[in-house]
Amino acid sequence: MIGTTVTHRRYVANAHYAGNLVEGAYALGLFGDAATELCIRTDGDEGLFAGYEEIRFNEPIYAGDVVEVTASVTRVGTRSRRVEFTCVVHCRRQPEVSASASRVLDPPLVAVVATGTVVVPAG
Image (tube, rainbow, N blue to C red):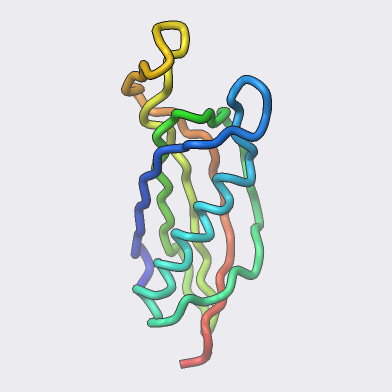
């Protein structure tokens, strides 16, 4: 179970702030989705998110970005699972070129990292 990883990729469609900036909670919502799939794969149940121990916002996320979220189990308790999360920006829009221009980032930007705990029913 340790090392089990789930990856989701998403096109970011909506901004929350001026300049097409997306709120930080967007990445946390994606982390929750990835954690749900992770719990289904490891325990056959959606589980419940107990909380975050750490969250770091390293880079902004903008509408028009393509992000990838990864969730990996790093510790297993009787009912708890510690999970490491990463949100990486792979593509970024280029409004200075045109309204629909975008480019692949090489290297991608690590936008958000977090560590959290999920709890699953006793098996």
